[in-house]
Image (cartoon, rainbow, N blue to C red; front, top):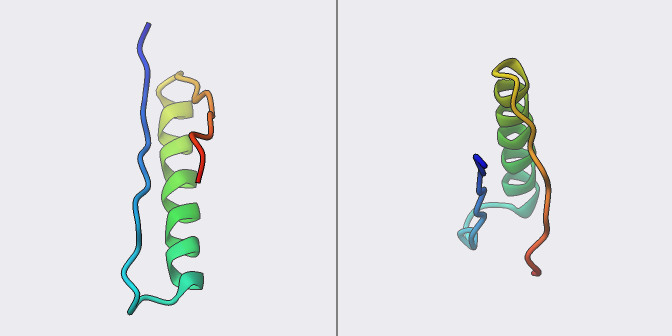
Length: 49
């Protein structure tokens, strides 16, 4: 089974949290659209904080 992992690490202190969050959300939305266009799903699973 094909599986995709999306790792998100720590952000830089100099970058505002709102910018980090907005970038992450935009990137995930883009990836989800690309996967959908390719006919692939994206099972979500949180690995903690």
